[in-house]
Length: 162
Image (tube, rainbow, N blue to C red; front, side):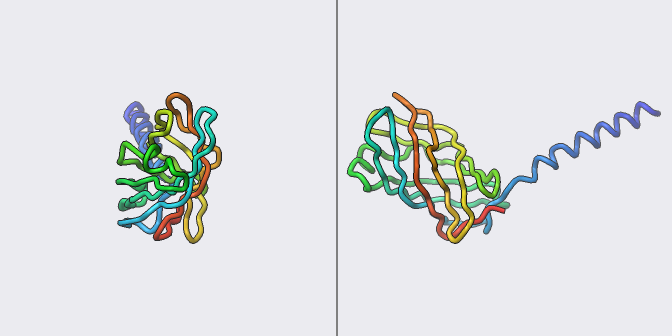
């Protein structure tokens, strides 16, 4: 009988672990479709002069607010290379709210003048009106070298992370 009690206690303890890890941050309002992320980002790769692109990303926040799905988007001038030599790829991307001050992109992918940059990226977030993604020397793996991204993307309608 004591072995059964021990097994039951272990099962109850194990069942509480996923519940604790499920208490993540959420986007509000949710669901929300459409929502845009827009603004200017500056990209540097392998010693080339920085290039500033206007970014527009089309997204939706799924029910529960656990993530936003970026369905498509474009880069436009800013600098003349944007939209012609530099443009986003590999949609959909997903943005996960880690905390009220940090988000994670499952993918942030784009072609560059020299090649491409693509990968998972954790970067800043600022609640406010509007909510904003903040890139501050964010590094994305790339070929022939990593890309460093700076800039801000504002949400419309405004998103908040709670």
